[in-house]
Length: 119
Image (cartoon, rainbow, N blue to C red):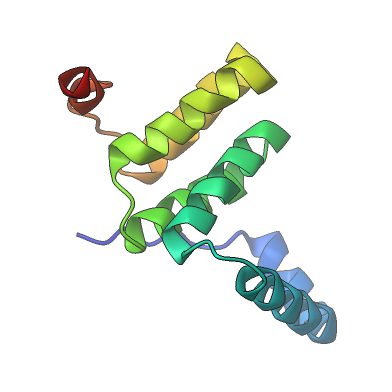
């Protein structure tokens, strides 16, 4: 089941008002994506970490869904969020965990369950 996230009204209005700026932004994003060796899944995981660290709720939710669409697992996403704990602090990581969890439908079987199995 694929969860779709609606874009915020303000975002849509900005794109409608400044389409040339949005298109330039999209071209820059594409150039950055093609500039290195990371695959799409890895890039989305990186963007989750950046979004959590910057306190960007909508971006965290959006890149969580995009990471899932590109093959990331819930455990990989939660690991990325946990990595924010020592760099950005507990409040940022806890907020990111909540945003990612809600973007994935608000359910999580058992936090860290597969991570424990790997030890």
